[in-house]
Image: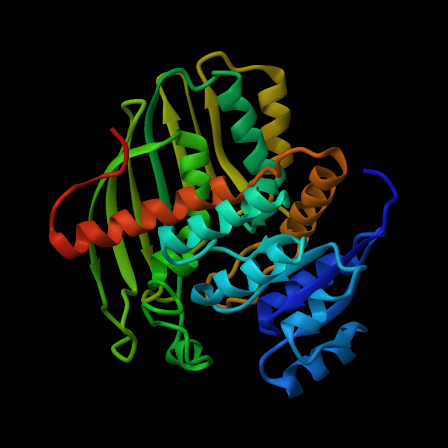
Length: 351
């Protein structure tokens, strides 16, 4: 990365915005310049904590020519409008997951960025953890043989106070869904990154515990991938006490299992000394141990690495690892799961 100083601004002041601010602060050639929130008092408090300017409007923030990248940290269903304004102003965008809650809104952002010539990245920090990248490398090296099974499990606990903490939580319009769209979408993203495009889904959803929300707190889906492999997604925010998220990738020549950021299985038919070393290195966890029961029990390591990737992509004029098109894929899968659960029928995503 070159030494260009990148100026950042954040739209939104919730807990995830603080993760962005801490990640930016950890990067030597990145500086947080400003923040906007529709509640001015929250913006002022955030600006004081993170040493930046609280702006009265998005438009005023975007007039700052030193701002290169805008982090969109609003409610999920409110990503489009600030992103479109930032793109129109010629700013690059780093958008919290999901890209948006519908494919139509997602496509608006992608198309606008392409037309304007700015870059969009969607926050999926799991891709940037070392153990996650070891699996991706082994897939690229064809060490798994033919893929057979790919599964994602996100079984967490969220109490009623969590959903009551913001009026957008647990709504179709602004949260876009429940346990699947909000919590498990990280695992949906990395599962399709490993296994390839999803051909079809069949699913059921339920609301078992949280009766005051519109959306599901539990979902189960069966997936068929275009390469012939099959898989499952199981997720919930209704269980106690919850457990680490788990991804399984299994093929005819090897299998890997990752729990949070630890490799709990790493076995291949042609095992090497390097595999033994890798098992030793990545079996003890990583920089974060996830948000099983507490949504803020996460670090900013993955966010920092993803921000650095976006900065490098801008400097090198390349595509970020998780651009808008990549970020759209998980939204498409989640929407298909919801459509299947609603209709009781399989949903074909791609022929």
